[in-house]
Image (cartoon, rainbow, N blue to C red; front, side, top):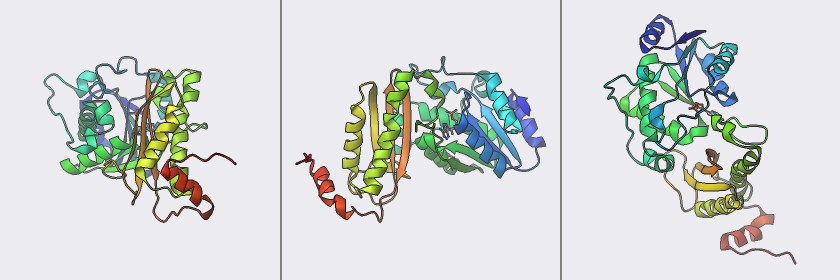
Length: 306
Ligand code: AMP
């Protein structure tokens, strides 16, 4: 496994690699979520390239750039064990040399909503660093986790706007046994915070159950139910629950017609977590036995046992 730290060497190495390259951009502190992308990149391509770069421009001034977990030796051992061909780990001055001025911005609702509101400038930093990585590594395919659902869509749009010759491959969310989506930031959680954080994947289960099991398709009702559910856990400060069009991320309010994305963001202690799931409601009817119950839920009536 080659470890490359400069742009010039990476470009030279890419020119030597015959065939297709799959790129997995990461910020290190690797876990099974990252490794699932790496395995797929290896399987699909002649070479797998993993980048490790904690990108300062995608962090806000009050975010965790300084304290973001970094463990070079552990990351390299994990990637070596996966049979990765090249690890590109440039320093900040390599990615942003003096006078750097190639900012990439994806305009519109895809970047201005949700994480775009909570983290101003975040997607500009992400798009800029990913575009730069694509120019340096020139991969045929690049792998991104659905964990960062908005990010995948922003990158896809950027690739199509700039006409970059790379296929974006979205990969499913990898979760711990208790349901919490794997994230490098989970390392910040105390045991009690971690237990509280489980309300997020459970809220997504609730959304799937309401939509798929009970046939509830009203976006506003789903959103309010999830908000109520999450707010019951005092250690969790909810940032948003969004029920959005799966492709455009436009917020839905009425009856859900196509696939919808349920996106959550919340702070647990000082750690900000995000999670999401897709719900499909087409062709799902309210089961006969649940009709009255569902009518009551829609009408905001509570049922007391008789
Ligand atoms: P990061 O190091 O957080 O920038 O993540 C690098 C890539 O790994 C991104 O494409 C993430 O979406 C993806 N990723 C992070 N966590 C997970 C997860 N739990 N499951 C699948 N992919 C993930």
